[in-house]
Length: 345
Image (cartoon, rainbow, N blue to C red; front, side, top):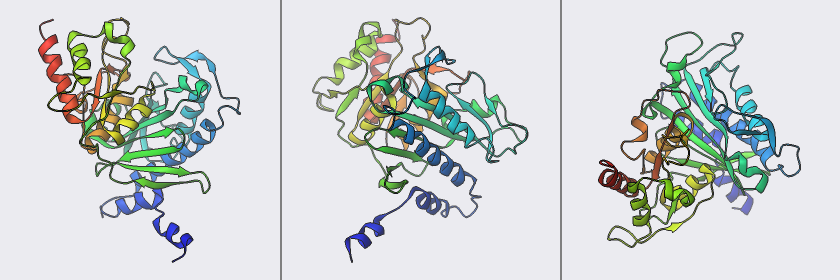
């Protein structure tokens, strides 16, 4: 066998992989498969811009704020528009919701609706674009709850346990799409030479021995006593583990991805510095729930410090939560120390 034949024999495109997964379910209609294809296509289009951010006129602010009160970056606008336009007309979705948009995003009346709901953060960490730091897209897919019509808020406000698929795209030294449909976590790397996502990380599992903890320790004075005690515990050698090394990029997808492959914990607790965000910073619908779904499929766990992220029923579209996510033992230790130090504080 020639080198070329050997190489081609190992190629598994994301389209082929998703289709093979679908074949395990004879009752499957192919709608979810095609929806995942559309997200992969959106990722390719967004990646074509992120890799040219220093050349194209997409750096910097778009001169407006999003619903979160954050300055919108030009590439945010492009990513939002791309994900919307690739999914508004397909007949696969009942409704969409985005971190960048205040209300739910209805399917235009001129297009049919479908059985699924798409929630997404089009470009997480976009403030890092100007300094060439990795950024990402996060998405989650639900089955709609309403029986007919254009889709409604109740279709979006579902607990993470109801997710049928979730994933993220990391735009870094290479572009990776990592997703799960509830049968393990699988990673695909974009080969720019052929324009395809190829299976590179099948069946990702968190390593038993974690290496890193990831947190913005500059906020430590504003954390509760339980979170401060947890941070100190992470740095010590204990019977359960060796002290972990601090690694923090400040881009959620990049920090989560590193710890998913190497083992560890990422956390963004509530703090007293910003009274506008007493419940934490990360958005339950667009960030916390999809990543919690993924980490559980990889053998890990995600918590708000007291309960599983996947069990939280959203009350608002842009609800924020504290998040501790990674190896189960590390997250459960956070819960224990928070109970011990904060319950009577």
